[in-house]
Image (cartoon, rainbow over all chains, first blue to last red; front, side):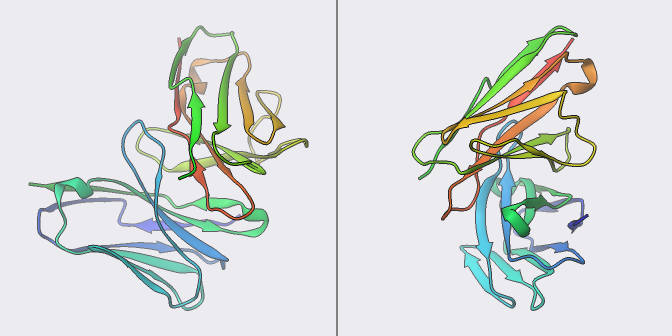
Length: 110
Length: 114
C-alpha cells in the first residue's frame, strides 16, 4: 500500500511568517500534486510536479519534487490569513490512481 | 476550466434508507472517476475507481455491496450508499479526469444518517 505522510499535521503561525510542509513516501510517483481544501468544499489544485528535482513557484508558494520522486515540499513565504486551509499532497501512481497524503492543517493568524 | 458537479451538496437520511450521489463532468468526457470519503479534519480516502462502461475497482476494506458505483456514461458516475447507517455519515467527494488532464474535484456531499 502506498502511503504519503505529511508533516506537520497541524500548524498555527502568525501572519508574515514562513513555513514548510513536507510530503514523504517510500514509493515512487510519476507525478505529485498539491491541493488546498476549504471546509465543506472539494480540494483545489495548486500545482503538479513531474520531474525529479523540479521546483515550481506560484506567487508566495514554492513547490519542490524530490530527486527520486518520492517526496515533495511546499514552502510558503510571508503567510497570510487567506492561506489558511487543509493542504494535501497527492501522488499519482499506476493506472492514474491518486493517493492523498495525510494532510496538513494550516492556520494563519492575523 | 473543467468543472465537476456533485449533487446533492448535503443530504440527511434515516437509518436503513439508501442515498444516491451524482457526479457529473460538465465540459469534458471523464474516462475515469474516483470516489473519496473524508472524515472530519482528515485527508481523503480513496474508496473506488470507476471507468465508463466497466465495473468499479474498490479499495481494500470498502464494501462494494454497500457502496454501489455506476459509471454509465462519460459524464456521469453515481455512488449509492445502501442501507445507510450513522457510521456512514461522512463527506463524500468525487473527482474526474479525462486522458489529458489532472483531477478535477466536485464540491462534495455531506451525508448525515440519523
